[in-house]
Image (cartoon, rainbow, N blue to C red):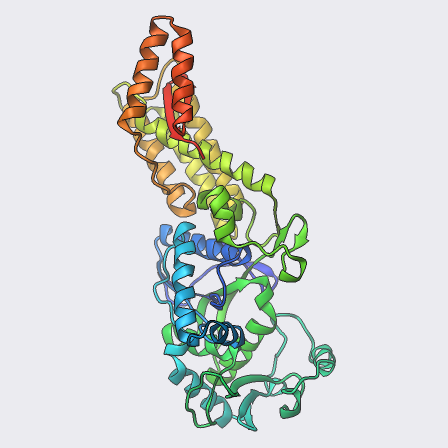
Length: 465
């Protein structure tokens, strides 16, 4: 298996720190708003990576944090007249609603910043003691130039970074020794939530949170650390500096970042008024097509969201679901596994594994899944139909691939008896060549919110989307 490492800018053979075990730390959301499509891409990408590593036999420990206190959370909580923790807890509940809707499995551990203030303070104290951090008027800053190799992840030089930082002047700048330095601890301001610390009342800076929690819940060195490409700098660059300065160990073997999301070929941002929430899109298209769309391109590529792309995803998911339904409903002849089916299953499994082993190429993995669907449909509709053993193996492989990609998962509604009776009544009308009645019954079924599809294998009934 090869994974692209942002640090080296190339694909590398994946070997975990501990044989048979893989640790993943994926930077989670700052819970000030509902999950947007950019967040959702990272969620689905890392969920699929985790699923595939488990499929390969690894024991995976997956940690994803919640930043549950920051300036935006404090401001929004004050506007609502509730505490920041009350607000963030409500948004974490909303996060899980969307994450589960996208078929994203819960992390093994979801640490929250506010539950881990003590370990954050501890690592700040280590950095001060080692000379990598300093106190200034109630704040604590990391001295970026003290860390040899600062900029190695983002490929930014200290000179360029210093020049850019010098042009950004704010109230905090006066407290810093160097414009590149960044906050580890922020002194409390009026009306803000705070914690007691050796540096005074305040709260953690953003970057130190992940350094402290990844070390506490995984260890000094993580196998895979990642998130969206927008986190490469400054967040992940600063994490490397903090963690490696504190421990003397490499923070992560592999740095993995998913590409950004455009909306109608324009970068998604609130200022451009093209900021889409998962909740909004799911209400129109459903969660399954959203997950399909987000995995339909290689995770490192830039993705473009349009209504047409999602409409296409709706049809693709429907095709997969129809195959599942067909395998459950078709009557096959008795018999053992045919050589044709054995070859097809082996070929498609190898195709799927080859795609995922090549830097988690979900686009090619989905292509392998649709090739399998085509093979299944051909085998079932052929005059010499598939045997029961063939269908068992086809079904098993479909479930294997779907178990990793997680594309079809919403339980289908049970068809009401009333609709089933109308379908049977229509079948009788057609048998008696009473086509006018058959058409009238079809219209009645449609009016009740169901779609009737006739295939070579029989009639499929489903609720209208």
